[in-house]
Amino acid sequence: MTRAGDQRRGPRNSAEAAGVSPMTVYRHFPTKEDLVLIDQHTPLVAERIVASPATQPLVRRIGGALIRRDA
Image 1: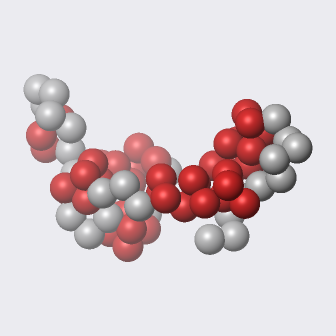
Image 2: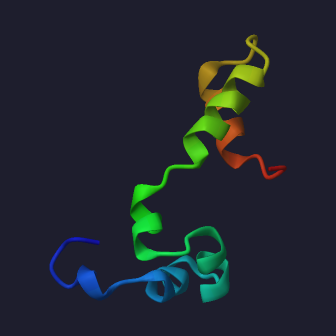
């Protein structure tokens, strides 16, 4: 969002680009800064990878952790 012209981009434009409502974006990212600065997902993904069966290939464990929707 720092490239020329992207400074005007905010939660509403991001919502449109993602195909969701602006309220959905605001619910998860209250400010523009939160869209790019807060990383709340890495710890959750890491926990899911650790909790997944070690017998599975790592690529499947990572993929499964990224697409799970139960959180």
